[in-house]
Image 1 (cartoon, each protein chain N blue to C red):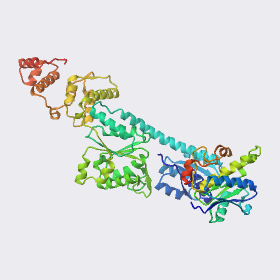
Image 2: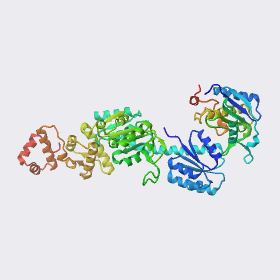
Image 3: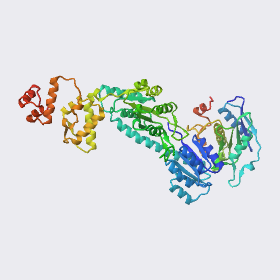
Image 4: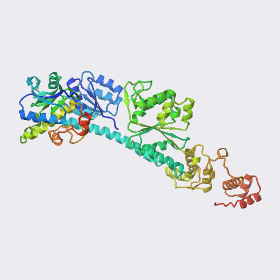
Length: 446
Length: 178
């Protein structure tokens, strides 16, 4: 899956260029040649090479000067300086300036093979290191998917079956339901898991920024484009690209995206070279794409290209049985991160959370728990610590009696079972409140 | 591939007839073409580099390319002199990838060059592997990672001994031979 290693040979002698070209091409590398530093730098402005073999002595700019300029274009390139005249001084200078190695022509065939093999190993290790770092992050995030509800088990089953394939996936769900976590779970369980998952929040970027973000840009492509920059599609080579809020992209970007998905190749903004990348696409949206297709605001061909498999993440109100697990998880998460002792939640507060509508879904619940830990007494989360205001309260289908019972219990809890203060708040006398407590069999430690 | 074409082996310098026939037989076994043996005559002194005391492989390859006959699908020049290319201290052989020609030499394949006992069988084994390897490049094959495949890169003479004289299945598939 990894791309082939590319080598740029820079030497003013044609015979040297030809023989190196033939040697490397037989080894299966992608090889290009330049006869001087100026030509090499111009090639490097339009595309990157993994290894650059440069002659030390060339007319005009020498290999050392060229190496310094290469660093500003591509700091990751491995530069090997070649020379026909062995000189300790120039070798030391080359290595100090960041050259990978310094060799004297002619080389022993085995030395050349070893040199390139070691350089290739370093490139591969660097790529693996990056991929593994991202994998660790991905796997941590997979653990963040909490829930035993039937709805969530169904989602996880879908994740499992879709992960092994290479198909495009659309994750549909309201804001805050954890669509990105589902995307990470798909990626982490796929054969692409050792390569990066690159996320792009399409809704947060303007059209031109999104274009540059996705495709990358060449130096000078627009004001402020000081250096060549890899796009997200290029960075996702071998892995997965996650396009969040896909419904927000413009019609122009929809056309561009469709072309990239069909050809798996693209050009950087301001560039003229086709770049190929092997990536899998996972999109997420909280909008009804099918309706958008019907309205003509989303391209039908792109919709069908993306919607090979769709996974719907249920809103929190449809999996209330997961709320206790989620609350426990967030308590552990935030108490640990704030270096506090683990606290508990008052059953009444938990019961109230289970009734809440949660328009912001799991993200809203998480924020509530974090807030409650910050402002609470440090031992237990009480109803008063939760921002469950009247305006955001759910409309339940309870009977009037049930509703009255809960309301009285809530007020009693709020005033720590002080009957006088609770009665005053409820605008009833104390006897009426006692009668209600008796009627509903309310107890302080229920 | 055109069935009416041949692979031509042109020897430059002295080679035993029997030795050449055995090489031709091995080549024929690997590639589905008739193999011709010819004797070539060029003034090798024109290709001699006194500074390196070796023969310029790139110029010899160009010379051979100019001698290429249309009836030949590939032409391989067989030498027994020490070959070099500008960047390398020596080569066993060289060919244009997907080109018409290649060159090989027995010089660096001889056991006695490394202070060991002369071994004609070993020399023949090594030589036929290098011939098939360079012809493989001419047919468009790049180096193969299969340890026993003849297309595996060999930078030391001992590397040649480790591989077989056959193309692996994937290399055969690559150039469309059964």
